[in-house]
Image 1 (cartoon, rainbow, N blue to C red):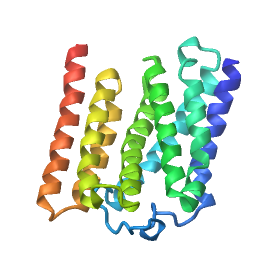
Image 2: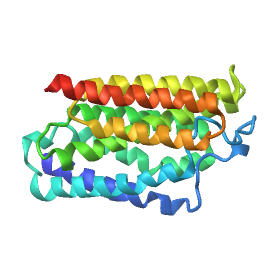
Image 3: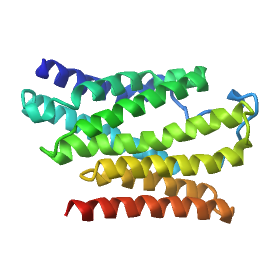
Length: 235
């Protein structure tokens, strides 16, 4: 069973990495996918921030490949494999779904996030850089992406607060979620650092809107504090 799950994780990681080829040119939800077009939403990071996907894909393939070849029957690698496999298998279908339905894509990405966080919590410190670290950056980016998707849907369907209001809620939600996960995962600073990367992209995208930039900087600082505090507590 362990070997089978190791193989599934590796195959799913490869499939996940090549899934963008199924939807070439996708650069996020387009404004006209919503009843209220979302043009330059403040919660969305600058385009360059999405380049982190290259690192995520490569590190997941490297980690799951190592797990398959060298740790297939290692009990310390077993706990995280089922939730990781679920998240990656779901992830292979996310981009095609996002082109069709932002709402269902948002539902799916939150399930991907939940299973990725489950996998992160299940990781052990054995071979940390190949087992835990790739899952941490994957979960960190999914945290940011899930919040962005949800805020875009709420604003795009004209629910309540509008694009800017939901942007502020998104900053608070992403920061609070990141701090909570980081406190529960003190051995995985890569998680918080990835959220910081996303917040840096938000700062860049909103440069000139100093109030929103200040909010993103505050969120970045709080997540950074959580990384340092948890590592100090761990000793």
